Length: 284
Image (cartoon, rainbow, N blue to C red; front, side):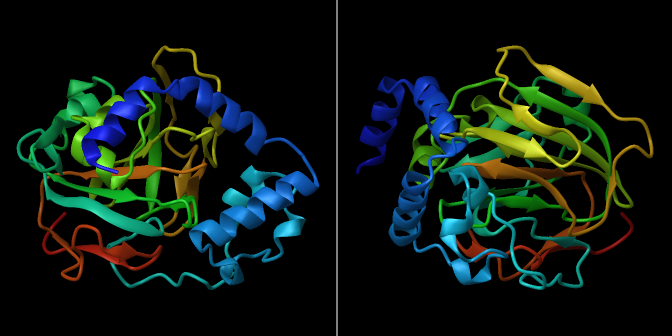
């Protein structure tokens, strides 16, 4: 389908209602119907169930339980890198932040301030820093892990649109990742601050973190913020930090400094949790 037509259809469709309906079904215990839908999904998208901690689709009580399934122990070894890839998926874009502008797709950029929900002081910490935008397709493992050890300082739920986040929509909707509903997680690390943003999308029933549980619903339409004192939430590199229940995109921000991304990385390349994402090449 041409990009322009895909975007037009999304503008017409009742995305919020569709997402709410999908969320209700995904969390419902529907027995054989749930199993049937999971089997169809696995076949349609080529989900590799052999890697799952529970490979038998009939053992999942809900679609959400299947979608947010755990992997077998040791399925994703961690590379020796300052920053590891936090998800399975594909690279949307990555590279330097141009002052406060993040590259989305040809002809489209958006600001760090818009991404983090309007907090200009927070955004200023990433002026001329680096970013990585990683897309999780329907077939992927949908838990998000820590790229490095970090201490959580803040979480913000930013209400917004629910456009799809697939590559076609990224090419066609200006400021997509700063317009969609998202959960902004702010961490401090040995190399300074970093932000990890979970971006919602059409049919994304909810997003959750390990320290809070479900962040949405509820969808109040208002920006919500939680602050965390030192020592309350500390996670190690590779630890799970959150998950999508019907999944989407992760955007990360890193401060200005000598950061060298994996030379094998390129837009649209497939990636796996635990592989090397970047190294600090000097004092961080």
